[in-house]
Image (cartoon, rainbow over all chains, first blue to last red; front, side, top):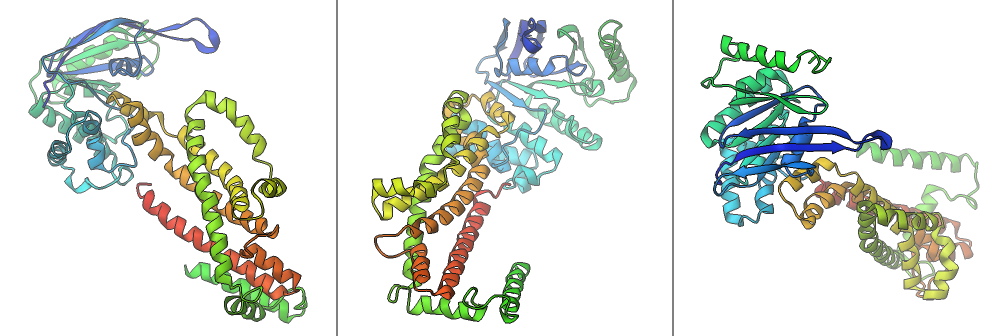
Length: 256
Length: 250
């Protein structure tokens, strides 16, 4: 397996062309924070504040106008991504979806098979191995998507609201599941969410982004031992703090 | 299945009633038993005598498969290119939309001039009929592939080739399959009509029907039409099976 990487974002800037030829609109403004290797970073912000753009830039799907992205760590792999909507290829079975990244990076077939079988077993997907995405429940789909992102051994894994489409119960289960997997593997995970509770429950640090243009308003460490009590007093305190920064007067009139 | 058979039985019953009631004399419309007898005669004696229905059908099928095969071979790549490239599309689409409404049958005089009266002439007409639905289906298939799938490959550093093979092509496949089904249907219709214009070998379902007409065998004309329909039904059945296998994931 590849070693998890640290991720350093240095003053990322991005503008998009305004509607109908009007001057460019700044989307990201000097985004700067660091994610330690093997840590979970939650990125919270109101809807439409450029979180997805930020992830797309880190993933290399869009160029930044300025700033640098650095992956640090010896033998660190590339980047894996779990998309907001399910981006599994519908014409591939669970097994073949998980093997996708390994096929693309040229992993020899025998090794590929071993890795995929490993993921199927750890993720409890053996029974679904030969099913197509349309045959899966929402939770199982997202599990497959996570396995697909992890399989090639990326240095950093990005997740764009990975559980937002799931019902509350499945979401709870998936959060616990992801933490369990992470505890074993210690991937560097960056995940975007608009759910403060989720961010506090999962993360080692929470990056708060305020909108238009997106700026890092604060980076809040979450030094609580796991497993955490979602509704315990420590978590609640942090939630209140994050909420107040997010909704500071002048930051944005919109409520969650 | 039961319901589909029922529909045919109903049609036969209606046809029989029309004939029995004398609405149409058998010189204008043969009754089902008469048509069935003519069908048997086509199978055993043939029209013209000695040229059996099976021979006509085989010749027609060979032409249609060659024409549609050619249309797939050319139409799919052209359609994929149209779908993938805006430049290509803006250049070629007007041209395609100009040629598309010209019915293949209007090409018959030119086709005969170019290819003579025979196999290649009818293959060309069938190709014309099948090419456009197939190319346009491939085009819209590629354009319809969700960008999310492409992104999920790009994150994994996929090459252009990988994006084609692992996302665009399989994503466009349902549409391509539909295009081929439509193309085969159009090709089959075009073929029989094209054979009305004549065939050199003296074989083909269209040729058979025209010969029956010239001999005033209206019963064999109707039987010949039924044969065309039956073969079309069979082709569609095979294609549907193939599509279901190919698109198991849908």
